[in-house]
Image 1 (cartoon, rainbow over the protein chains, first blue to last red):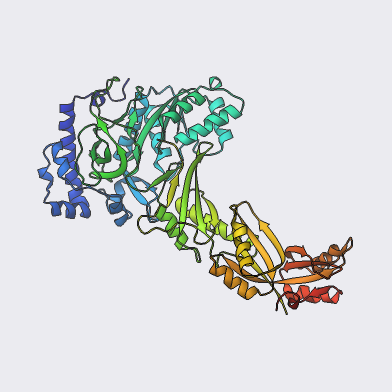
Image 2 (cartoon, chains in turn purple, blue):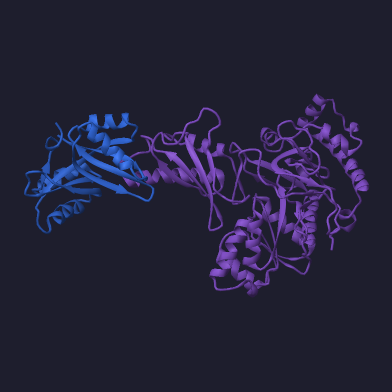
Length: 433
Length: 142
């Protein structure tokens, strides 16, 4: 089954022509509407009319996350705000958020991408789609919501949290498709078991999980625990959100919605495009976006591509499950966290030394993050109450910047190792590879 | 003369407390009274020594986090109700107790406690008024 058979099974030659046409239009659009792109293209001597085939893509300059930050909030928008109907945001490295916008058409395209993914894993308008991604600035909740709505499914916008209620809804509303982060799916699977139910008591049959890295082992555990087939959905808000790529029922790589987003794999050090099958940094170019069409956006995710036709019948390129990052960004419970954010929070609290160490773990299938902070004379007191108050202040400050709750542990002064070069600030004990 | 307590941050790891007492021992510092506050994450060692100022200096030199706090010493009757008597006086006067700990004096026939309260002056006055014998800093400090 396909949502858009013509596109999803298009032969490579026709697809390339379509992509080239759309790429040229997009380059024209950003050249005319986004000062940063005009300057950068001029610098490279590139004019929109130079784009003839998609092979010309490799000559275009990259776009980086810092470009979004430097032009915060709307500097890279290629559409006037009156045409922008939705704004989402995700956390950035220095506390400044990355702001993304969508026109009405962008939302439609995004919803179609999600709908295609849902159909490719066996979903249909008959399904009851239970969305436990967070709703809000995060693209997960509304992204899956719009896609499932477009498909014509019955959507339950549960959002995150309140596990007991989630399980009651599974049972009473008869949810058939669950959408959330894989770690939350694990957690829900356990909660189902603890409630005395078994997967057979539920109507769930499909899970669509994304927003954080997870392993094949985790997939099997979720499948067993919830009695479902678990599928990977990939996306990032800069490109549009979840749905840029999605598993099909073969569970063998993620089909990229290539008529909207062109993927490339590059060597992160040289920027050279790597041959098919090689692992490198995933780069996306939006070719139909109106509000925020990013050109060769460096995702920092490590993946590889294969153009071999899939047994499911789709002809689109498939990306492998992302297996890491080229930068130090951590994904904790679906939220992007940079160690430098922790540093700037600590530096803003008087008397706290900037020496810290982050330990990330997955306990009971939920990501945890603990920050060790060195005790200093201004944090210390003879009273436990006073120290705990200060500990709480640090926790609150981290929560308000990172949007996730973080454990704070006070350790002795000078006990966190100092390093000349790149400090080892993070220990990630999660076993997800 | 007032009593000054030396408080030291103790990381919650085995051997950390011994690291502190080793420094005290190497420097000939005798502990006259002590208590440890512990939480899940960390502890606070509170000690009364002869020379709090130089003890603080020595500990800081050895990389510890230290603070000096004024506390009150009181001698109480070593019989049932002895502690209650003192605590009731403070409570009736609306004085909060942050913490307290007992210690032994070499020659005393009475029990002795160190009290950390939220209003030193008022506590000292009311205790003295009620006939509680306060211990001066000269009992410990030079």
